[in-house]
Image (cartoon, rainbow, N blue to C red; front, side, top):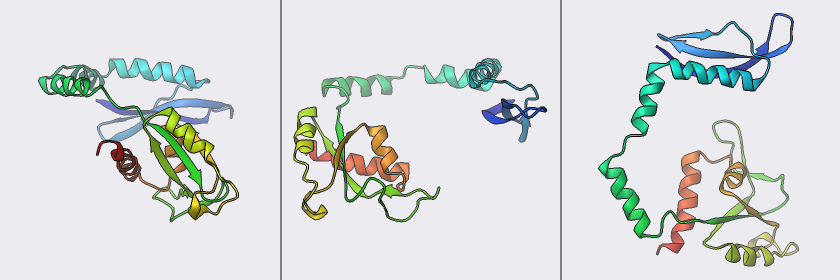
Length: 177
């Protein structure tokens, strides 16, 4: 059974840039010999290989199965108004390139600042308008920016994904109390 497909960047025998597909079969890593000269072509071939793979097909089929638990959970969320939408902001303590803390497992650090979570875009805009660049950091000074959740994650790379999600959940729980 072929598993763990991935596209890797490399060079062909003439030294031209190309993409190849790696996969694991019976605990051995293989690389497909034919080069693909665009990432799109490699992605298309990867899609074909995954369709042929019975494990991928089984997983895709199982993911679509409806269960009473999923249905009950969706009904409950619907009664509460659906998944709540939050708006995010970030305030730099110093400059945009200042980092803080110790590097995470990948050696990355978070930007020096703090995240804020808001229920409405108007609340976030009011917070952005209250920016005091000349004030010291402890009194709410520093540059403030509006960000999406994924942009916020990029500013907090020193945290593990689990730590980041807990922090965002903690900040957003102030609305549910």
